[in-house]
Image (cartoon, rainbow, N blue to C red; front, side, top):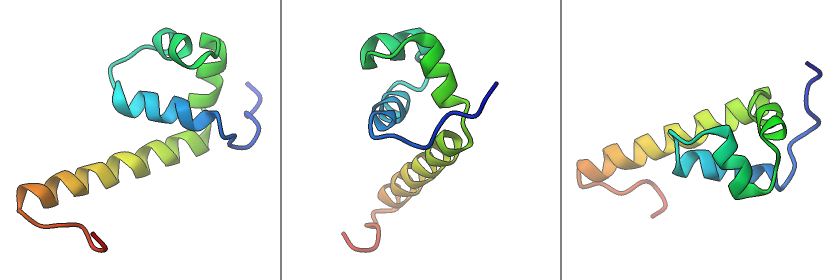
Length: 76
């Protein structure tokens, strides 16, 4: 499959949807974001989506760990 073009502003909605509903399906994401399931598949298959998803989940995990320790992330 041809690599999807560069990251677009609307792709952020797809990323945010999967962060909020990690067990959701591509069809559910498509319905919520206005994309087709095939389009969602193309977006989520890109290296950039994978990198952004990993970065966001790592950041969230760090924030949860700090909160459990009663600490705040730097700058907050």
